[in-house]
Amino acid sequence: MTRILITGASDGLGRALAYALAERGHELIVHGRDAARLDEVAERTGAQAIRADLSSLAEVRRLAESVDGDLGVLVNNAGVGFGPPGEPRQLSADGYELRLAVNYLAPYLLTRLLLPRIERAAPARIVNVASIGQRPFDVDDPMMERDYDGTEAYRRAKLALVAHTFDLAEELAGSGVTVNCLHPATLMPTAMVAQAGRGQVDTLERGLHATLRLVIDPALAGVTGRYFNGEQESRALDQAYDLDFRKRLRQLTESLVAARD
Image 1: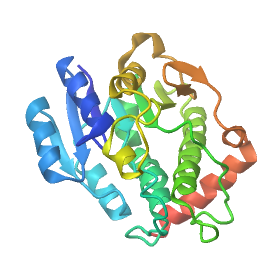
Image 2 (image 1 turned 60 degrees about the vertical axis):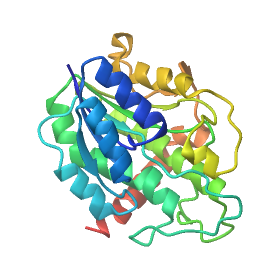
Image 3 (image 1 turned 180 degrees about the vertical axis):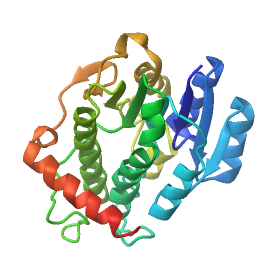
């Protein structure tokens, strides 16, 4: 039995993942923002439930502090989608562009805060739910103050998360902790997709199977620093492999996170 934290577990892929892992006997900690839906998942799975709004870095820190003991797997699944077409630029509780804050800064900080507990549980895994829809990230305009578009903001944040995955995997090489990311499936039937006005392409089951594989498949025990499109190892956008970009992104990220300590 592995102790697993899933963020964004009150709906969509995260909820399906929680149900599947509970059926396999794993001990779960589930995070969500909607209290009623989160309690429903916790009751069905026997999980510890922690409610937090990941648009606030203070709430991310509170979430990390609420996790007791060591952690065998962290699944960074929570996110904000494209938003409705034409929606204006939104800011997080800390004054950061919302999609950057929730889709990148939150999982970055949460992982950093929980890393000692994850390393103690090694062999352990970190799984970042990214997207195939990656776009180049402008380190000089991280908040998209110029030419804002919700879809573009989402895709830039996901590129940053992929780049961070590769960075962290290199940092943790030899520690027994693997770090991978994936595009689980395309436009699954989730609230996020519905809000964006997009039609369904793939089933939720397809995304669940791909994510579950990274979480528990013994064949992937030593695999780290990879990006998967569904169940297939794939190549992310070129920028994610650029060491100079990753260094600049890391410096920017640390400054943004530290500014809200």
